[in-house]
Image 1 (spheres, helix red, strand yellow):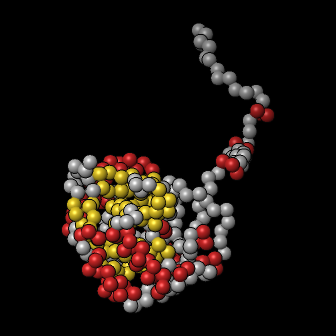
Image 2: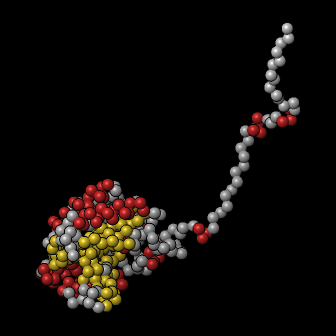
Image 3: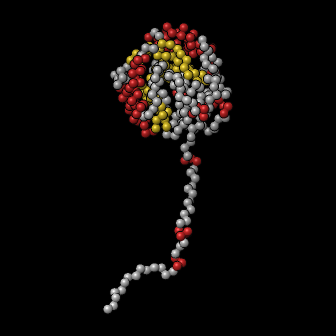
Length: 319
C-alpha cells in the first residue's frame, strides 16, 4: 500500500535571502523635521520696565493664561466735589514728593463724560486679588460674576480717609481713598464671590480687607528683579494694594529688546511717602471727604478685567 503524499512547506532555497539578526535589530535612522518659519512662531512678551515707568511685572507671563481681577468702577466727572478734591490732593502731593516719582492712577484725558468731551477719573475698588485664568475658564467665570451681580442690590458707600498702602511685592507704594460706609456691603460681595474663586482654585481676597481706590503711586527704593519676586514669601499684610499695572496680559505684544538690568535705575524712587503727608491730608480733607455729597457714591455695577478686555454687569434692579 502506498502512503499518501504529505504536503511540504516551501522554504527558500537560497541562504542569501536570510538577514543577520544584528541587521534586523538595527533601528532606522530618523529624519529631521524641517525648521518652522520665524513668521509662524508666537512671540513671547518680554517684561521691559523701561517702557512702564520702572514697574516690574509681578507674575511672569504664561502663554494662554489671562491676568484677571474683579472691581467696582467709579467714574468722577469734572465739577463733581470728589473730582475736585482728588485734583487738589494730587497737587499737594506733587509738592511733597519729587514730581517725576509720583504717578496718578485713573486719570483719563479727552474722554466722553456724557456732558461733552473732557477729562475724568476712573477709580477702581478691588474685590479680588490678581487671578489667572486659562482660556477655557473665561466664559464660565464671566457667567459666574454676572450671576453674583444679579444677586446683589445696589448700595450706598462713601470714602472716609486717606491712607498709604504698598503692594504685596513691596515694589510700589500707593496713596488711597479708604471706604468707610458700605464696608459691610462690600464684604457681602466677597462672600458671594468666594465659591467661584474656590472652584477655580484661585486666591481669595484678604482676610481683613481695606476696600480702597488708589489715586497715585510711586516706586519704592528697593531693587527687585523678576527672579527675586518668584522667591518672595507669601505677604504678611492682610490688605495690600492691588497692583493692577503689574499684572501680565496674555494679549500684550512682545517687546523687541530685553532691557539691561540697570534700565529701571533712571526712574525716581522714594523710601515711602513723607511721614506727615497722609496725616496732613486727613486733617485737611477728612471732614469734607466723609460728607455724602463729596465722598459718597452708589455701588451699582461690578466689572471684571480679563487680559485687556473689560466686562461690566449692573447689580440687581439697576436701570
